Image 1 (cartoon, each protein chain N blue to C red):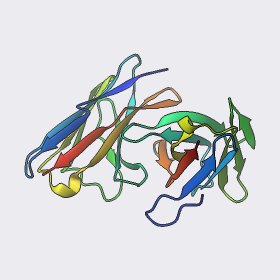
Image 2 (cartoon, rainbow over the protein chains, first blue to last red):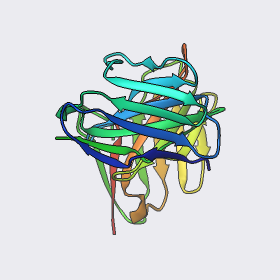
Image 3 (spheres, one colour):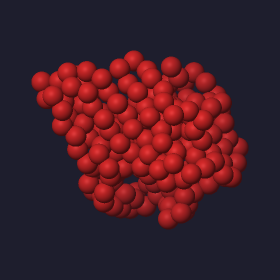
Image 4 (cartoon, rainbow over the protein chains, first blue to last red):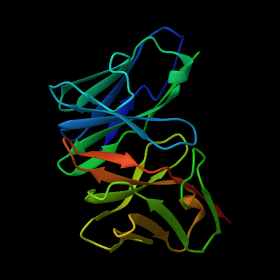
Length: 113
Length: 113
């Protein structure tokens, strides 16, 4: 099946700094990518939908200035958590859509100290 | 295994038994539903899907049932094995300005040897 990768798989950063997470579709082109956030023992919550070459669409309650999404190519989307705070600590999962199928990455564990 | 609040409902079964995991979805216009398995620290893994014009779909050891009247979805796992232990999520494909997958709250399945 199609493969989606994320980098890094885990990251620890200090409060107030920014961190970038990459999502790549390795063997297919993804016109649409999605970013989810998952807190412990909870479900995946959709943060935003990004289409290649256009601005991301954010879900209600997600701050677009805090979670910057760039979908510069058909195989790469990035999520930048700006001015991170401990409450941003979470598991961030990206997903890439190819025609009608949607594939998920392995997730990135972010810990803000 | 209905979801209530923020705590994952749990289901514990003996190895070899059949498991039934339930899910209620929210949008009557959703046209496509997917069951995912998530192991600790990993991204969701596709199990089986069903379109809204079907009531039942079978895979290898798994069956998905869809009841659109009450907006209910279930996943049946036959001859459950210890390797089936994980959290299971249903997701619905919501149509609208842009399609997106929205996840249910999940059920933690524990298979006892």
